[in-house]
Length: 633
Image (cartoon, rainbow, N blue to C red; front, side, top):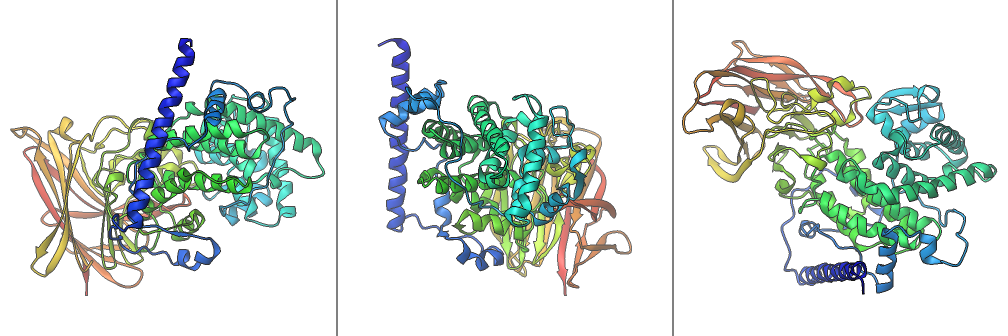
């Protein structure tokens, strides 16, 4: 046996051992769950009225939070020795037709099954498509003004929609097949004409390729007319070529989520195109590895982005639909990952059922989130302790407090990374009082691209800023530089004179290098949910405090419909909510002022809001600044 063969055999042995070990672990967990030994109290009930009303429309499985807490280092699905050799040969570059039928002429590309689209799109965007416009985050663009070619200079949201063909989901939700098919055929023909060379231009970024191939496979009836055979053959040939390109380039994705999207498309092509078994086996192994590198132990993506979390869930839902269309049993990996990904996402919901603005995401509406959860077929409650994902969640009756309690994402995980450490959001009932600006990931629609970096800055979040500097350096392309390296968190229940409260004490070292100060934030939410006390403390990072002063600003960005009025003397402000309830904000001895701000919703629309600002000069020897938010009456 030569050295190369020995290496292949050794690799196969390692894969088998790893697969046996994980399968044994999962089997052991199932036995413990059946015996009730893994029962963990469920977290707080989410606002999921739409989910509850749609239970009968999609079969769902009851899931406890404990089952979401499993290892993410998944092995490929168990396979026979012949399947492993098939997967290995395909990974080494042997074509699927040669592996499956070496002495037969390769079959012509064709779809072997029709997929039932599992995700609902935006009907308004679909109607705009039928009228001849792309409609992205509130911005309309006529087809003729959108350059689909390699030299097209599209904003990031438009690039994703146009090059990733995510608009097909919207189009399919806007009418019947005869009404929508002419638009699909027109646009796919224009795209093929504008992109004659594979691998050139933004269309061939791995994530765009994965999104596009998956969209073509899932929504094929919208693109291929029974009367236009030339377009059908042309598109099918391009699908096959795209799948082969993705086989070779999927590992070159810009980040881990892009790689996951690429692997999902590879598996879908293996399921729906002829002689695809080697490709499917190859894709399943790649997807298992990519998910293990992208997802943390409690099910949160390491990008820490709710928007990315939703995209990962959507990709797995569409992949599962491809398995079902091909009448092939999906590997347990898909169900396990969906069960892991959903609870952390629900942990970032407010009282209105929507998601807050974190790591570049906009404020996702409850209805959009509910549709995604129903399609996932996962019934669960919010992850009780999402600290592994980097967030702290406290609920008290109608109040919800969310805190960013971890360093920002770095490296290949950062997508639209924000310097938001120790920022918080606070809601009461259906009203959000304190928010973050959000929306950096949606810049390029109604949110101008030029302010994308500003939306990722510390000042765009409800936290303390020193020296008008970011706690972590904000770089271009969504990346972050040096800054916060360590965050310490302590959560406990404390007794108060008028009841009890949950106390969170957290600190970060993002300003230690520049100003010699550690930012410590203490938040106490009373158990009746009607009082939030806070204190921002600056502690010298060395043995001796430095001389001099540094400017500081503590910002509290207010919810969209909150009306702030400064009290006489400038020490406090009243906050009027749409339901008529009144809250009082007091900032201690420091002067309080009201400034303009903006808040970006989940559709990428910016809304003018206000912000409360406590600012002044702090000694480099340290200082503390207390504040109080309390419901009146």
